[in-house]
Amino acid sequence: MPDEPEENGSEPDLQELLRRMLSEGGGPDAAELAKAMGLPGGAAGLASLMAQLRQAMQNADGTIDWSIATEQAVAQAGAATLSATDRQTANVDQAFTVADLWLDETSSFGALPERPRALTRTEWIRATMPFWSQLAEPVALRIAESLTTVFTEQLPEDVVSTLPDAGRMLRSVCGTIFAAQLGAVVGNLSTEVVSGGDVGVPLLPDGQSGLLPQNLADFAAGLDIDEQQVTLYLAVRELAHARLFRHARWLRLNLTSAVGDFSRDLSIDIDQVQSFAAGFDPSDTDRLREALSNGELIPPKTDAQLAALARLETLLALVEGWVDVVTADAAKRLPRADAIAETVRRRRATGGPGEQAFATLVGLELRPRRLREAAAMWRRATDAAGIEARDALWSHPDLLPTAADIDDPERLVARLTGGGEPADDVDREIEDLLRGDEDPPV
Image 1 (tube, rainbow, N blue to C red):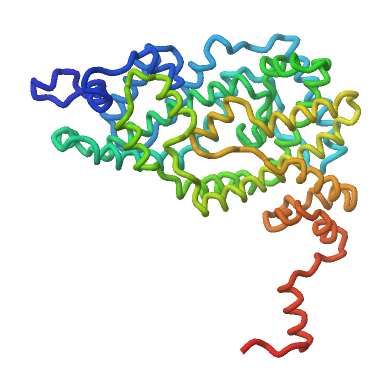
Image 2: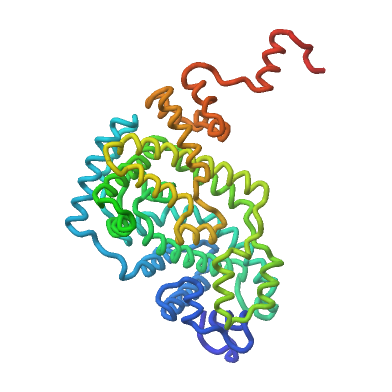
């Protein structure tokens, strides 16, 4: 938008408009505001965001430019991004070669079409951002629509009248802010993850896999275990995860559909937004940081969201449980495999700061809450029916074990071994009806 003063008859620029919305007497310090929003680069980072917001206002088509998220994430990773040394790259390559051979013995899924590789943090960001944006877009659009409603109602009529197609413009601005926040979260995640499948979902494109040597070294430093053992174990786990999603092509779509089901009912607590805005002091950056970090403006989950979340958590638990069992069998030659596995399980159960920030941003946690129970079910199925029968369950979503199977693995074992699934009340009633043991219902 033009930068000329409003007195000259032009539209107010975005900085002036935001200043008026926040305070009559002036806004917070730019560097502190940028820090509170999690933007890299301090005041310069905020200036970059403001430029992006101006562009969003000028080209307001209601869509979200996710390239902004990539730019912010790369800036967040910044100077901390290092290329792998020749030694690290050689260790990763060797680990993946051995991991492929071991997995051929413990899984029926074949090797990947592309060779696994060592990734820098920036490479991981650029490779995974398409999937992050796919996960976040339904949530971003819902939040943008809700915030647009609130802002449109709160802005003075004379301001709204000066803005062409205010609703579409505000949606673009809100989407830009959300993309910038997602970028900051993914940038932080890039300093925590050790592989492409580290957070349980297929972040890398289909058929690709990789390890981040820089983060792997930090992970191994916290353990009293040889780094080569850690690298090999994590290489096995990464390839097991990637092989599963390569084989079960429907799995990626089911995960994103579950996220879409969750976000469909997402809204902003308008009363809470209005209450927060009424008592907010723009100079209180700690209060702003708290509001951004704890998700207080997102209302409690609806029944439909809870149901979608339960489906998602079950699916993630099945994936992670299968990966745990296959990795344990493949890495049994490693002396400290059990200790590494327990560290990975605890890490997945609690999530790192970046993963927690993503959960706050979209109101969704990507954690397999029933990981141990799912792993126990897959172990029982493997011991009872073998690798081929176990892995055949991933050939179609209708064959996949359910939450009830996790509760009672013997149900699954009965199906796999031909013993038949224990009959429930409905099955018994149908059998009785067919035998003529009771009169049909009127």
